[in-house]
Length: 369
Ligand SMILES: *Cc1c(COP(=O)(O)O)cnc(C)c1O
Figure 1 (tube, rainbow, N blue to C red):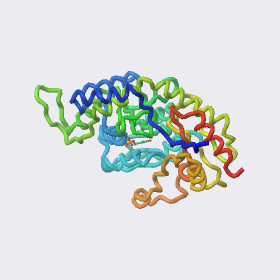
Figure 2 (figure 1 turned 90 degrees about the vertical axis):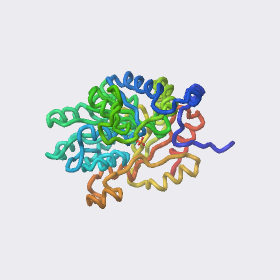
Figure 3 (figure 1 turned 60 degrees about the vertical axis):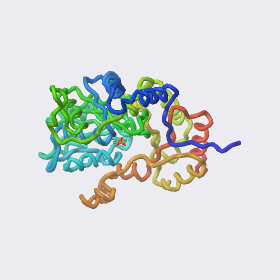
Figure 4 (figure 1 turned 120 degrees about the vertical axis):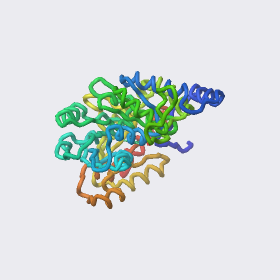
């Protein structure tokens, strides 16, 4: 038998997606044309918000979302200690300080009970993350935000299509933020989308992504010092069809996750939860190893078997930049540290074959047995 190779992920790009991209190339309108407008319309409708604004990356969405509240030097933004480093980098880019809160060991999302003690008179924004697509506890988070009069930005980078309490994530905060990087469930290559119900905020996003240009008047005017955070029509065309078939993609991802849940024995690791009050889009299948199993060894074993497993996210305060600047130590965020040092993402994507799924299960179950 041929060896089985299983990449960590594989984008779902079909013939129609390729034709859509080709049509843009033929049209000659490459940047922020009709495909970007169509993508924004589709995302706003799916999330259930008034406005969606497409930009060049998930990091750009977070940066603009924070700037739209005037976040800057002297301010603090509350974020989970375990996430993609971009969550905290976006705060640093505004000149504000990320204030980290440890995570819940089950959901791997911010511990709501840890938020209140982290609030100070400098707190500007609460920025929970729906890590790996698993919805954060928006009930408790919104309650805290309201009682402290703080806006919420949802870092939903991984979580397009995830739900909390029957509604799509990205509709709960004052702004929602999505990434369309190839590691996410649907991809434009690079890209991001902001969601909001506030038309003033949507207009700020549109102006800031395009050099500060306000084109609502008779002649365009430059009203702010903006960025070039635009998305191309090529990118929008690539992802539009994937968004239309998102429910099918999520159903296939869930089927793989259910197989893992049933057939992985879990003798030396904790499996990811099926959220009780919502649903994940299964962006990742993230397990946490027991203390007796070393992550590098386990990853090397899987890679040797042709399985592209990897670690999941960072314990951000312990990355060199944050450790040096703020002086964090290894014991400061124990659950985030454990998830970082013991976390492993197994391959999961919609087009996984029966043979690939069985190979992952067999290899994981066979480790050290
Ligand atoms: C992927 C990711 C980002 C960054 O998105 P990019 O599109 O790569 O810039 C930010 N936050 C979280 C939680 C992510 O998973």
